[in-house]
Image: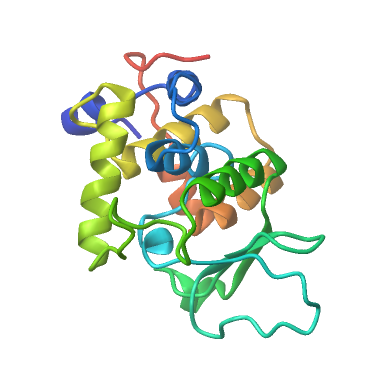
Length: 200
């Protein structure tokens, strides 16, 4: 799967993405939260984080939203639950624990900027649409990675390319595909194979 010229120009090796995230100075900024989210767990699509509710509930009798994406950072098992996403009809509800390092980032961000959504605009108001959130998040990615062509999809390609270079087993490939919200065939198609791309 060789990248098109457009994909080639947008490509940033995964290790360079990780280093760029570490270099962000303001660890409570929206930029850092976004980049931590897409590097500390398998990179998902922008749709899933647009209107993602943010809870800090430890009550075992709490009733979570039925039809909305959310994260609950309270209690002994902080977790993400994604219900509304592109391939949800085929793949169903996606529930995963919040990685400990990402939990620290989210709590720090929430302490600095209390809110009810995972991401808001600078004035604290929700993004009006997926398109407005996608535009903002792609601008952050371009700025942080210092690449005017980079975008969320390019980051997903970089992650998959990097993982496949470690020679994943079939089971590992399938798990990565599920965690990224698509099938294994699509996951394999996301892997770039080109001598012009830097490898680990």
